[in-house]
Amino acid sequence: MTDRANPNLPARDFDATEAFYAALGFERGFRDAGWMILTKGTLALEFFPFPDLDPAQSAFGACLRIDDLDEMVARVVAAGVPDKREGAPRFHPPRTEPWGGRIAYLLDPDGSLLRLIDNRSLGEVQVAGDLTLPVTPDQVRGDGRLYLPQAMLGWPRAPSIPIFIP
Image (cartoon, rainbow, N blue to C red):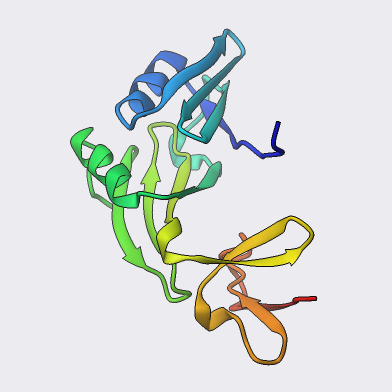
């Protein structure tokens, strides 16, 4: 089995969460009273019960790097997720970020933020061994360093950090 990491997200109600994600093409991989796994191709989202969660206070989220962002966006729109700036669920259409990646944003009914990242807008750089990072061409500099926006790594407060490529 290939190593991987799966986001663990809260669900106030497994039935409602499963129905929401089913409209986006996810299928049940596993479910019992204390855990649920939904899959779509190679994507897997894992959910734990959190019945008292206030979606407006949720700080849960994940980046989903997908090969066909347009197909996912079409599913989100067909599911009736509104393009608005308050409440959950909601959707923000794709845009190209300053660092070059194309991303859409989806807030699920429980307030979890999913960053839908278009793999086609990214390249990859091998950092060490089997570790690769998605990058845009402007992030690789002639000084032997790769500059990644910290927001891409989940650190939103600084513009970029150098990573040395061996």
